[in-house]
Length: 215
Image 1 (cartoon, rainbow, N blue to C red):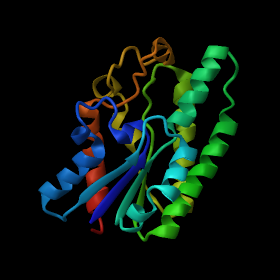
Image 2: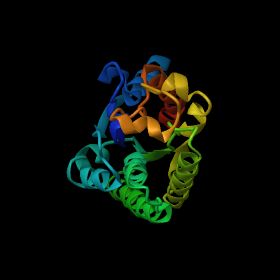
Image 3: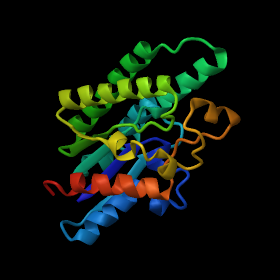
Image 4: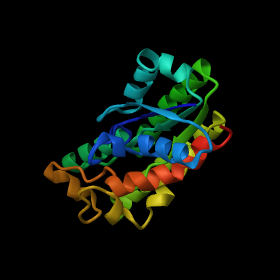
């Protein structure tokens, strides 16, 4: 069984101690170790990719791989939200969350539609955890992002993996470079938003049953 993980820097494994410790590879290893089925895992992800970039990659780079996949996970949208939020914070202009989420919905729907048109794979959409739980606006924005993810996934008959629940209240131990859990922590140049090795383990353990289901 081929499992392909689509995403951005989180799926790519940025800030994991090695790429082998990124959640897609760990999840595949867990399923293989369980003996429930044999999984080969692949990653189509790059740091900095937003939904438009991932859509472009799914069409032009990943089409052949996706067509051979039995399971495809999609975790995207953090860059769409973070780039707009940091720009808003720096310019002190109000974040236009409605416009961002509408664009996210359109692009995510196009990504899922592209996958479905090219493959019979089961699709898993991952929700986004909140790396800034002590900033109310971040919580509000990510709640909106996750609601949009569930709505689009449901419309495309995709499963939803609630990653945000797996991280809730545990961000300090699961995010690389976590400081105060505030958006301002990201203004110094370092973005404390990616999972550390333990965070990737948590994601992988949560995803493994979705990979094995239905085999």
